[in-house]
Image (tube, rainbow, N blue to C red; front, side, top):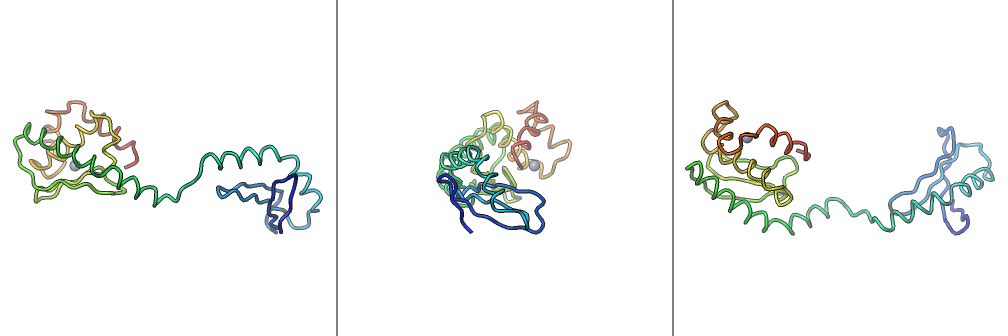
Length: 182
Ligand SMILES: [Zn+2]
């Protein structure tokens, strides 16, 4: 059922479980009033009228902050940044591989949900396209970490001692990188 109250259309849902009236504005601009069963429509109209300025503010918010489908937005971002991410990774890997005196094979950029980077036993290095958003100290730590795996394929004390040669504050940097989601 659709009701119109002072130019804001809203939908009424009658719910047996609801104990009181509840208003919700969804990101597609639909306004829904949940009404406990047995409650008079007139009470609902009064309730909506009292909340009108709140509803209008919420509608205005969604108009100025359109919600995009997330997967599509992420794919678009990956496409936009992957080339930049690749040249960034190539330059940094070259620099740190020289520093550590190691050889590597291929560098690829991935759209991974859970990792910043990885290193295979064959010597291939992968980095997340989101590295373009990292400040340079964090990016250096990440690349140093993966390059050190070319020497030590584990997280042993020996591995961390290698990392510390280039990034003495690696513990702090590692924690910071983890705080960014993965
Ligand atoms: Zn590692």
